[in-house]
Image (cartoon, rainbow, N blue to C red; front, top):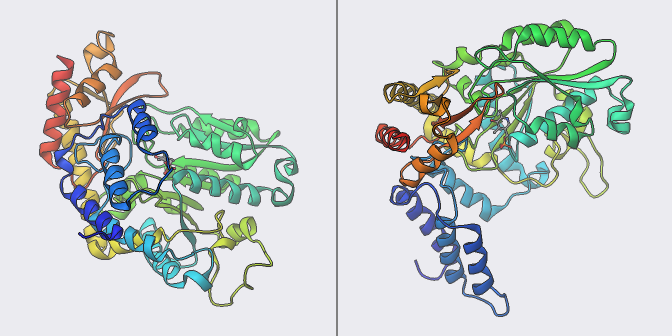
Length: 460
Ligand SMILES: *Cc1c(COP(=O)(O)O)cnc(C)c1O
């Protein structure tokens, strides 16, 4: 590989990708060991050889990472990463196109928009005038959704912030929605208390009657900023009833945001699409490429079918930026970010490699493994609770219900066998459960069998 650090890093990346099964999913290094090593080895007093440093960084990453790219990783939604997407990320790092401006990042922006339009159509938006871009992740996309929705609910919010609201701003989400929504409400200046958590039904989906009642009760005192429906909750993969929620939003004139960070991928599969029917009625949608879609972290996506509302929220003018163009919109004028990495290129390359049918097949195959997981868990004496059509299972066991064993203990014992990684969660019903999710397109039935064996041993 010689001494070229780029070739060396690329070679190491390929080696790691190919050898992933030779390591345990859970990195063994403790934070204290990593810190001691750094303090000892890196005083930064004299320059180091880049090759030596890169080798050491790779070694530390190997030991001090939970390898979500491992086929035996069944933890919360961080996908494997496709080989083509890793290669594309290397090109992005080398060219480093500035995607704030069309003038500087034309090719990267067009590549991204071309790929995002395909996803937008699969989400159900047939017209091509949606506003869409990549962003850091689902959290950032949800923040953007709140900025857009709050500006639309109260245009003076743009200049005066939350004090411009004539009544208390309110955001409605289910009890199982992602807890980043409260952080987003805080960051946007509406405050965490503006988030109203609505009760869920037996399947952990938002209870639409409870939503209707709460919105009706709040009518005299609150301004609705948004109703946020989750398509695939983070704990259990519950899909809120999108059609009835969209009907309510129509009646109320409320902004419907769909947080489909993980589960939105189901819309890209003709076989799974029905589970998220109604997603196309959302005015804005959050989707994460770095979950089910097998792209690297930093592949968040924000879609909005009201480009005027996006511009009303983010439009800006700065003397050091070029004048707006007639033929292309500069991304910094239609999103929260300013400088912007070309995060759409790994998406573009992966989509081109698979084609739409190949992408759907990949998604379907992971959903089928999810079904196999549920069947296997039941056969091994576990009880799957609140089953989802998406490839995630929350489950318990008679010995967990009696408190004889704890979910944390069982997860750790299963992980310690070095083949699989799962984690516990707690549902809004209060129940602590174990949770396993198919995140990785490289996961095989044998990886599921290993997980089930190790769980059985951990329960014994
Ligand atoms: C993962 C997730 C988020 C947060 O997305 P990040 O990419 O981690 O920022 C938000 N909502 C849901 C439903 C998620 O699953």
